[in-house]
Length: 311
Image (cartoon, one colour):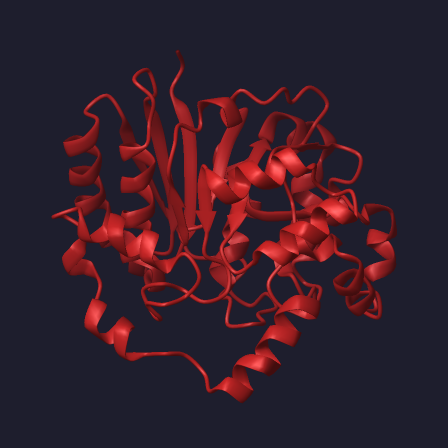
């Protein structure tokens, strides 16, 4: 079997988190899974290469690490919701990896829990990417966003807007359609969901949808998944699978390394604390001390999150 090509794009703020994410990927692999892990990072994050090599060597000597350290061409792109411009680095992948046809992008705030070989094998003919439908599709949230000046460009995406935290990119098709040049131009715009909006706008009609278990957003509660079923976005079986046996938990919103009791955060801490080469990277006591915002602030954040926050 060919190596699964995976990429993380990040800056110096996420070097510890990338190590945890990559380790969980390797620890959850199937017996025949081996990886070519690409790290696209800013020069300030380059030092993570050495510990990452050790993490990979310890877990699977047949997997490999490829570092791509470069200045962020999108450093001045629009930033909002405390998300840095490092998120835009994935838009440079078609040119940065000219010989690569397919690659799995994952945010650094994920915990992998089972083999991703089935995701990797998603049919991609005439498709630019494969991903999971996001919470933006829920009616109340969609209506909240519809007032944005650019939202008309997404009018056909209701029910099909993807969360880009886990994205199987068909780079050959992206290059064929010339989307990389358009992506670069669109980084100059003020999109609320940043590069995620760019991907949704430009890839309409060319997206393969995968089961929500491959991007289980940790901040979503059972009632939110129930609404996905009611609105016909997911089937009941898909929701049950995402809730009971997620392949990837995505900690969009609150991060477990900052607030211990964030939703599903204990799963992340259980994994990290069980790894001798990871547990000292994070301050558990500090995370336990921080209980997040006050009750009033949490109420406001819940409203903002549901309507116009995490995607």
